Image 1: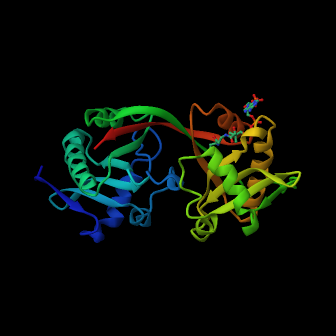
Image 2: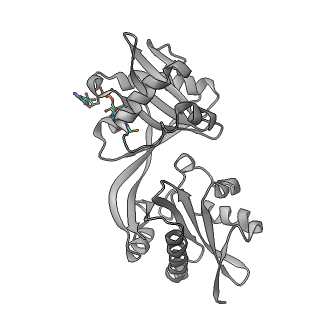
Image 3: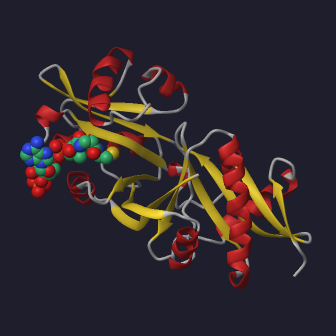
Length: 289
Ligand SMILES: CC(C)(COP(=O)(O)OP(=O)(O)OC[C@H]1O[C@@H](n2cnc3c(N)ncnc32)[C@H](O)[C@@H]1OP(=O)(O)O)[C@@H](O)C(=O)NCCC(=O)NCCS
């Protein structure tokens, strides 16, 4: 095998389709490399997905692309790895090692503190490779999906798509439930200009539950759903979610997906009850830089 050479996709843009094909060759199953961009998880990787990454490292053997590792945005301190995706099982370890070393150097110099990676629990070799690079499993994460085609339209009392006057009430519910998220900063209007849709459930003129949905076309993505603390346990999330499913179906969206921690008992019960199928489970693995 010729010597391995690393390249940055920005310097070799002609390799974008080949790199996307390499990720596409690792679909859900025992070779699965979970996409690090949540709303694209489980969808056929497209070349444009790679443009949304912070960077993509390529491993070349002669002129052949044999490995790729994408660095996906997560927070100001942490990135999510997508890959390494490698063509040759026999040489996976040295190719992965070279890509991981280079990723560490690049991320450290860019000021990041740590990395995370979602590893499909069926992909034992990916888990072993990451462990050998200092990653350890934190928690399991489930990916759910629900088809929206032929969904009967239903009227849900108190449910509606948000307008600007609703933003403070929605932000109150979301910030209380997701204090570490930056979704409500600088404001929900900004998120809506980025493509998010917000939905709410009102009870006696008060916003008691809210949700943020992203994406359109291939699949929409339920980024967050929450009921204000004092109103939990009243099945209000089921009402809100059934309104969301009907509203998204009207937008001609084929399906809706989401990820949720496996230990979030209330949320897992909600999705199972609302007709979602569990597609796979991934271990969230993290490592310091
Ligand atoms: C997940 C969540 C939206 C569920 O909302 P909810 O409308 O309170 O859900 P339910 O009323 O159906 O309650 C779910 C289960 O938890 C129990 N439960 C949850 N909170 C409770 C509370 N404060 N008091 C009593 N029971 C409660 C219920 O008994 C129910 O169990 P059951 O289905 O076996 O009866 C809500 O717990 C929440 O906002 N969590 C924080 C945000 C979050 O984790 N969102 C999901 C990830 S994006």
